[in-house]
Length: 116
Image (cartoon, rainbow, N blue to C red; front, side):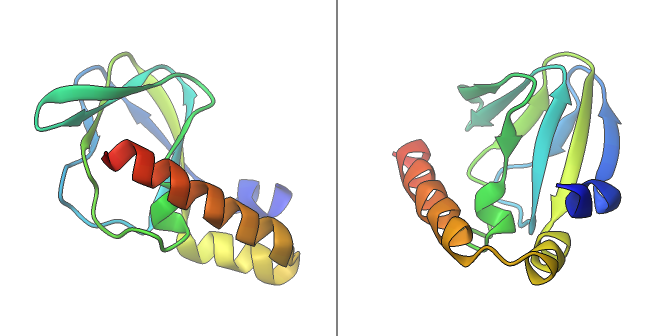
C-alpha cells in the first residue's frame, strides 16, 4: 500500500464533470476517495460508485483497454489515480503472484458481468 500511496495521482472533480469517456482507452485505475460517481453507458446509468469504490482495475491489470461507459461525478469528488506502471513497480518491489492472479481472475469476472 505504501508503494502505491507515494505514486498515486490525487484529483478533484466537480458535479457533472466526466472522469473518463465511453470508448476511450486507459491504462489506470481510479479510486473514489470522497464523493459519488456514476457509470453511464449510452447515457443510461449502469452503476454507482460510492466512496471507497474503484473503477478501471481491469485497465490497470491489462484486461481491457477501452472504457465501456462514461464515468461522471454526481457530487464533488476526490479521486486517486493508479497507473499500470505504478502498479507494476509495486509488484516488482513486493511480489505477490498468487494474490495478483486472484485479483485478475476476480476482475475478469466482474468485467464480464458489467458488460452483460
